Length: 51
Image 1 (cartoon, one colour):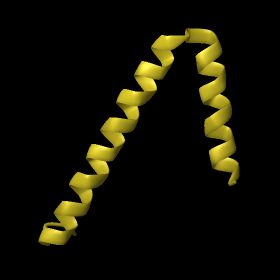
Image 2 (image 1 turned 180 degrees about the vertical axis):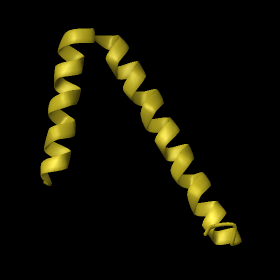
Image 3 (image 1 turned 90 degrees about the vertical axis):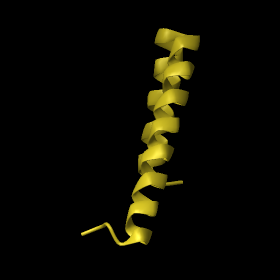
Image 4 (image 1 turned 180 degrees about the horizontal axis):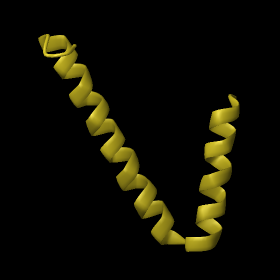
């Protein structure tokens, strides 16, 4: 387990304690946005539109 993953899990635990269920909804939306951005970046590079 990397230190970055451990840090992310600690932040998630703290956010869950402070904000409750709203934090999980927000994190799910942020994760979905990250996945969409990653897929968009991958398809852009595979088409040759990259650098």
